[in-house]
Image 1 (cartoon, one colour):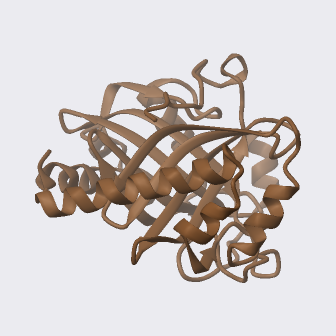
Image 2: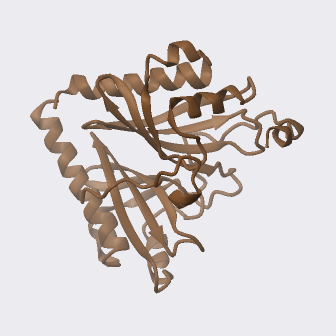
Length: 134
Length: 146
């Protein structure tokens, strides 16, 4: 990989981690104005497009909500994060969030979420989670 | 890390998934999956055999489509859609593979039912650029396999 490309990937990784941690750990709505694109495209079927919807969601998070990022895999304009959300649903949820960065802002988001199956109840006895790198 | 390695790892994952899920060529698939494959997907039995046996039990209509694929170090994450496996709704997946020495050695995933256009509050699809087409389903077959 060329240094230029690698640097861009690292910058995008840092941007997305600052964005998602700002939202779900610090619960700071100003990161949405600073780090996210004004026309943020949303592919999570339960959330409308744009950043106003995320601000509204932030205000409605339950007291026991907790976001735990795990493995981060980034390349070019795409940054993906494996994670666990507590308090998003009745049970802890495992997720992969996929972000596309454009013009230095977080521009588009896809995710896949499911209820965590504890290792003891899994078909293979292993945890669904990866270890945090962040 | 070299760009070649990342490109090689992505190609490995795509070829492996196409070989196992679309071509259903279990002999050829052994070239991609380590015999010491570590499984973290909650519904799949341990090891390479656990995965291959699961696929062997699925109907011939099974289809895997890949979306965004990203490689970083020894890891690849690929966004995908499984259809035609006997359930009424397609599965959208994010598969995480760890690669060692040209083989898939470890796997995690997240699986979610695909939302319809009517269910999407943004109007955008969960996967790709369009909403999944309805797949042929056979509820009796699904019940039998449970």
